[in-house]
Length: 218
Image 1 (cartoon, rainbow, N blue to C red):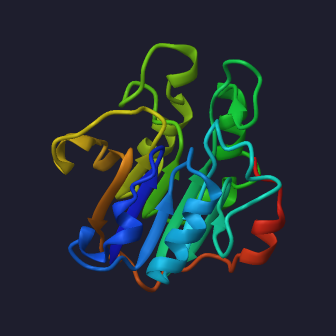
Image 2 (cartoon, rainbow, N blue to C red):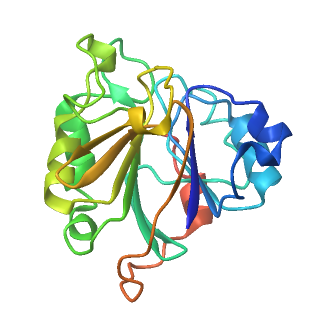
């Protein structure tokens, strides 16, 4: 499966030139801090599902969410055979929207969705903030979450895709750090990758996408 991930920076070429990518994507994953209109346009341009979480600057999403896209914050869903989890926001630093203390993020990971996260293998996790000590910084806003490291250690998803920490990369390899067999990727701008279904027979309970879109944009 061909997947396009985006975060933090509007790449106009993605909306103007389909040959910006080597092949068309089958799925788009958005990792935060992008205008909701941009996600709406990406979804319409490529005509594929778009799953997203919100970043710490996405204050308009509550009133104007992207059209035709699915918010998967604190969800585990199945999309085209892949089990994908999502977590919005950054570390708390000034009390704005989509900011979480470490303990709050751990509750998101291990609380309401505990039975899902511990019952099935995860293929992909998307978040805005990175895991602690991987691609993060030491200022309060850009520290990663320790809870994400624990999630990787326990579930070993094939991919952990995040945004939040801005950096220009010369090639795709510079974006990737492998931790516990998981490829942790900074998707600033956009990152295009291919993944395979590890266990096509495994399923998780159906998720109501319309209900997700109506829930609070946390």
